[in-house]
Image 1 (cartoon, rainbow, N blue to C red):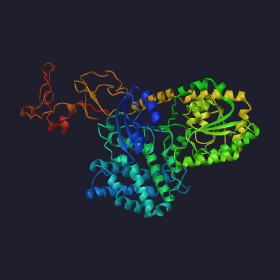
Image 2 (cartoon, rainbow, N blue to C red; image 1 turned 90 degrees about the vertical axis):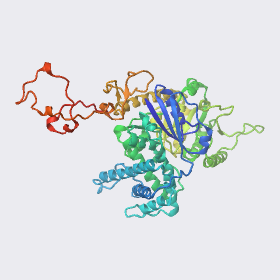
Image 3 (cartoon, rainbow, N blue to C red; image 1 turned 90 degrees about the horizontal axis):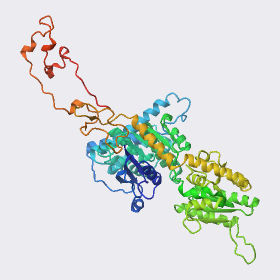
Length: 622
């Protein structure tokens, strides 16, 4: 089959959130054909180029979310009126959404309004959807939206919605700078509405749209479903609404409330229109249900990770230093290394020979400042210790990065210690923890995100921001090597069963076939007589090979077979035919041997009851 893979900030570019996962999926499904539609987030990402693409990728189309070029489209009076109407409706749905209430979720209204809430929620959802698709149809008719979305008309429509009766308090408190910021963010998020991807030679030609994430990446899939009836599959390993709550903590409450309403409305519409939704873990699944996703559409598919680089470490766990703890990841405040350092101070009191290796680097200036703070704290908690007066002191805590001679890879980092620690206060799916499981290492983790789902019963879990509990769990495993070995072996077996590339690819292959088997065919294949070919558009329709006769031809989507034949000519009414026909009271009974070919039926006589005849009609399957 032909898959339209929708990405944002990822595949096929070298750097990206879901780039590696998408590359493994595409390479693992060589029997399918992929068209990649990628949205880029930065100039740096575009400059780094693409990863090598496999032969099953037949097309790559890209669009920028960071470049604010003017498309040059100037609307006339009628188009400006249409834009103001649709944008005003969209802004109204955002300003009336109560902060903290997720659109489409249950249990977010008072008991007195419980009966009216479902109808009101459905009404607001339809209102948002009509405004969104109205803007898309306007862009399709007039040529684009970027200039209109950045215009004064958009800002004034947003201001009217925030000042209108019924707007919530934070919307009413929005100042002009806040409104300008929200309008700019909405313009960036709505850029896919202006793309020319939704024609019959674009996303209309694919059998299935697969969005590698929610939010803006799923917006082209929504429009392909709206314009071309292409089914949509949404995969989320991190819910965009949750990411919004964790991002931009310095923004004003009005900005955060309005943008949260937009992401919540878009998520609810995406889940409502999707054929299936595949969260990567139960944590993401709970967020999706909170945003209004139907449980019948949800199928958890754990992310697939390559276990090959960690095979050597997993098969030789005895090579690890029994006194070393390892932390591996990206340095940022959410990882709570401060609590880990305080916990290690307690560990050193019980196990003086213990060491802690913190492996990883910062991703932004905030992370660099946090790393400097952690290094200063480590120097304060653990002064350099020397074995004698003439020896150089060393700190039991080391800050390192992979790629050097001591730790060439992440697998070497995990292999260097007998115990892997995770101290995060915010976590989605803990990919680093799964890598440690591939290496056969026992783990001590904080109970956040999908940690418990990932490790099952193969590791110890403690509350977050609790250095004492973290220290006690680490000391218990450092003193019991047999228990460490059992937990490490069980963790490796669990990871190989649930989190490999093979299980991920097999799951999505089955989901693709399942969706196509329940989706009406949009193209009818006809044989040489004009009759539909049975099972002519199965799910395997794009698998290499000859599946239909070479004489078969395709008809217009949904059209009947007789529509492609030569037009039927009208016949002139014969006066002789108006005589009493044979077999009636005024004529002799017909003889079968005397019957010739049937006369043509006049077109003007089709509506007359006396001229109705059983005419075979072939309907196009939809």
